[in-house]
Length: 309
Ligand code: OXC
Image (cartoon, rainbow, N blue to C red):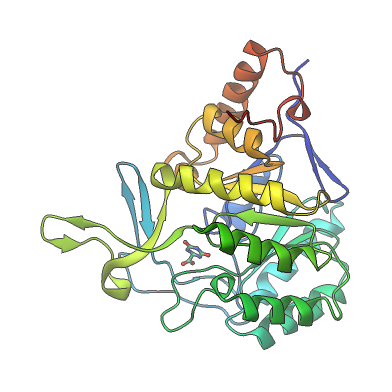
């Protein structure tokens, strides 16, 4: 029997695959599709305190090797998603992720205070890395600010929480952010968010409207960067912090590589957008095939065991 079950914090998931926040998880209908899919769990669209329309369209374009987006956090607002996760709780499901992306630290604190005081027993993913809000820097690239946010959050928040990080590219930056994260009772990191502010051109024009065409890159373009981030955080973070890998997952082989680098769970973004939730059955069976060919029966047989020369 080949198992692809995994654990994050004290929660067991029968399948190590889920959606990346932002992809097909904004409305009740989309969230129900995820729930009824073969994914091991799912996460809600990163929400802000108030509902948002997001950036003007076109704001998401599929590319041959991935995608570019500048959605700008369109979402139905915190109350909507809190209601949603509490309804799931009432139905006995606490194995899901709630993503929040306040536009200010104060807004994040307001949302987390309500979550803390609610019956929610799932996992919160605090998004510190949306690249698409004009005028708002990505918190994860500002180390002092990140520390300030975490200090404030953990001065009162006691439920399981993880952070979604932007991609890092410099060894010193990996060490600096890991040192900060290791100081706090963080349960998981999700890496990576899209590679921010890329520029894609067709004919003589940009392809998305917001920010003069600059947007977050996803898909095959970003896989090597995503794997590097998963690997570095697997090495640098406390062993009880789980890594959720995200970036460039199109095939079972990509899932396998994320786990080999140290991921406990793997999120799917661009390919979920392209193929819808049926991607989860394909990725699961492809991953199991690969494991079978290597005589692996569980993720722990190869998780983090990337060979070095
Ligand atoms: N990352 C995010 O965190 N958010 C979305 N896009 C992205 O690449 C968005 O809503 O813009």
